[in-house]
Image (cartoon, rainbow, N blue to C red; front, top):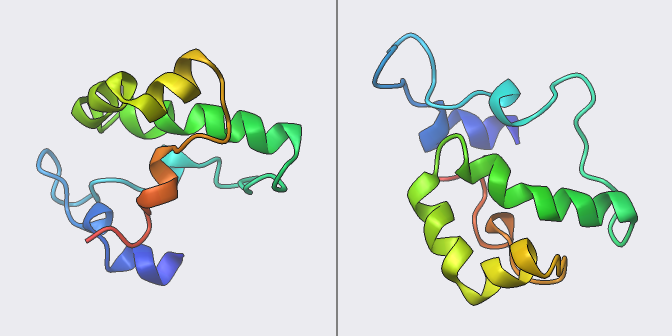
Length: 97
């Protein structure tokens, strides 16, 4: 993930402060204890429910608004259906170009 991140859009210099990347590890992760919970566990289900807000509320507000109105967004955000699609199912934060 680190090598993919270094080549990604998120690693490029930010507009406001060109000495810092657009997004860094600790903007999305607790860098001391981050891990994706085991699939099919209650913790993984909760992780999936929190995913759209993690990306959308801080940085990707327009896509989050579109997601909220989509069939997938309604399933996840309103019905708490953890089997419906979240951002990370189609997009990767580490290798985004």
